[in-house]
Image 1 (cartoon, rainbow, N blue to C red):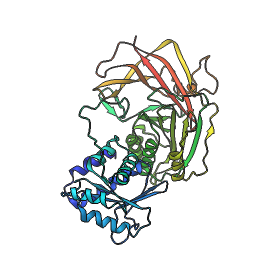
Image 2: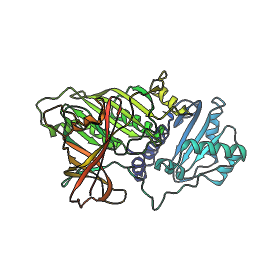
Image 3: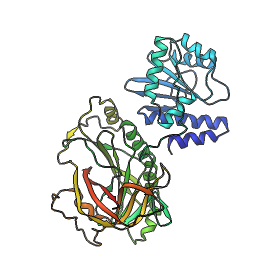
Image 4: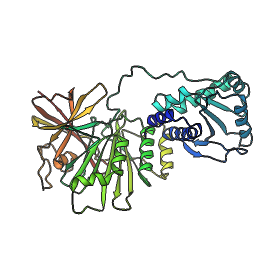
Length: 454
């Protein structure tokens, strides 16, 4: 469940006790997505139960979560300080209140700064859930104001009434005929491939690679891992995924859709109507990083009565080693990869091929983006290079034997991006495949196909 959906459901809960428990979980999820390790019901501050505690890079604090009808007053703030006095001197507290704070409570916090208590209000929490505010930046600003000016500071955040949508921030809708789906099945030549939603950009011909092994235990664990990756790295939002089982592949986009597709493997396999299956299927998730770079998560799912995930690996491919590696070091520690090192990624350049002349393609469906309404941002087309029952590769003089573009012939359908969008309800008379880009990451060929109309 996304943070926004989680908060929307909380807004509908009237039972105060039940709402309080789920509110604590929401705050934990917000902080976890921003790279903090969170403990529920810790014993860090004795004398009474503490809701949460969080730590990262030597920073440690306890958290109180309040969603009540009345604003938080002085008695509650002073009780939090009493618990802090029994904790180590570097421990401080954060209070999250959806009902605000009394004037006397704000004044009390400013005049009684040891031990330190930092209030967060409803607008700030909603801003973090919406992705418009950073907890770390808020924390730094609040500590600066309380220490320099003895004042309580709150961010002036308001949701935009007319938000300008950012391209590809939401998953695509795949539509063939009257059917719409979050992922689509097509036949393959038994090789893995994944389709990118944005042009491939590494920013250099000599990228570096960081490869991590992750002990993912189940779909929920995978969901947290993917959200942590997206928060640690400034990703574009144009993610995509692929699932392969022998000569079948499912393709789609969106973290929640990916995890749902993994969990619903029985429903997916009903489409195949096969007598038998391989005991495991291959899963892959791909995302582009702002400024140049990619990240890819690959793993396997054992299917059957006791389905489980295993062999999870992450590869991060970027233009160079960042100056500030604190977030990356924290990710390595959190995933148990303390000894991981960046390595020069040889033979990881982006391959390109232009179709001259352009190849006419036959659309069987549209890829819909709803940012501006019902617009086709891509096409699902019959692959003109697919040869059923073979393992043939796409041949062109410009391609080397190891080029990922040679896997273009692998799938019965191609998921192409339109250079010029048009309303999804109206198809053009002719479409042409113009060029393709490809890159290897985590031993997986990633392909970006661009098409348009004359």
